Length: 250
Image (cartoon, rainbow, N blue to C red; front, top):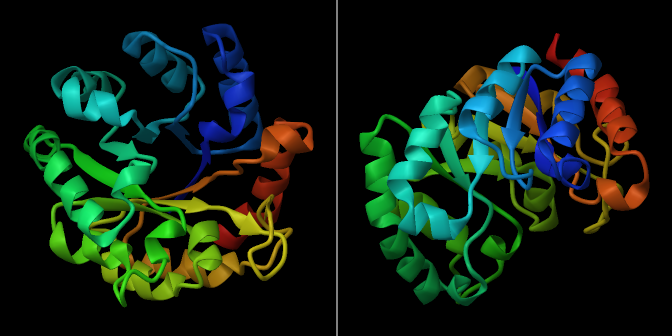
């Protein structure tokens, strides 16, 4: 499994192509091996491909806007093919769909674009928060996503699983490398439901997660720290996560 940087962490330092290149350079310097694009500036796909190749940070997954997934599917697919990214991800479902009935409506909504994405040889993946684990009459809507949409892939978020008091290891075993090639490494400062912090400075033990991900075929772990822009130097925080966590991959 390779260790990567989720550029959403760096979004406030990636508002122009020139700033984005600095982010690529810094993540390469730290030692990250792959990258996820999310929340960055608008970028020509060929230029983004060249930048990722220059700094040896292949793009393994994105978070793409739902509007583009639904209404600009073909162009989105072509862009991902240009920069060699195999997974089109969605950061979350709309607020109005966050019920059992609404989740099933959401699955109908994404059925056509998901088929187009899959037919093009790519995968479509959903990133969780913790609302998916709220009790909805005894049914977690995350389980609806898993059980009722077998073509749907996932980007597990370790912080939000912990926040939602769900078993990370159980779902890694269930989704394995077949329906999950990317996982977000995000730590929680303290229980219960503490704030996000750099990996290795909180309560989540990443070593058994890494070992199980390796065993079942998850390919990429990407550090995401949503609140990094509010806590100071994002590059320093990403370095802390790398220094604390990368040795566990050995």
